[in-house]
Length: 275
Image 1: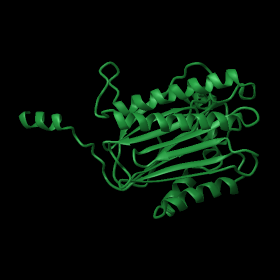
Image 2: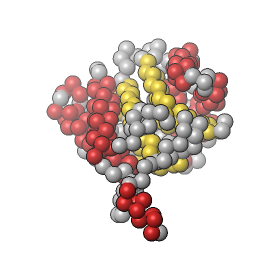
Image 3: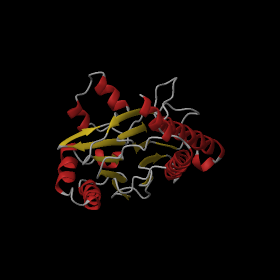
């Protein structure tokens, strides 16, 4: 089993914010397997935190189990997807099913749902999966960019040219998501895989941060406090609250300290001798 604890530094911070009574965000990470997860729940009463809690717990547990028993070097012949992508996608599908069933059988949970964004580091790559408008960003060599596109009405309007990205940043109807876990019996999960470089920073966040703090200010904060990842996460949370804190604020971050090539299996090595 691959252990990334010495290769990745991870931190996670979540805060209720200045306006909401409950924190309906849930965060989690497992530094050993390089897994980061963030969910932003929605629904009446405390149902949002039930949905996000189920999502994060289900995904972390299922991914841990899969990593412990599976060969992650396998690529699926039908889809061409690497095993970590399939593990994330299947775990999210399972979480969706559980949340949907719970909302149908527990009256207090009716109509609940959650966004999800998660990533898993393996073999000098990061595998990402998301549903909704919680985001993943990357800072590399002073270039800060968003790695996920929101599943939201606003993003669709930007894609169709009704809004510019700058106008979208100032729009008030940001929070209408077009995809979420638990709303339907099945959900479409968006998955990607990109190479990782030493010294990269990766940040998952809920819209409580991205709606309250401009991307340039997030970039500046990470750059300024980069020597201390805890300080980065706390400063970002503080910034969102200073700007109004209208929603729960969650940040999960990873700093790549060293490369992490996968250990090749003995069979691969033996075949390599004859290649």
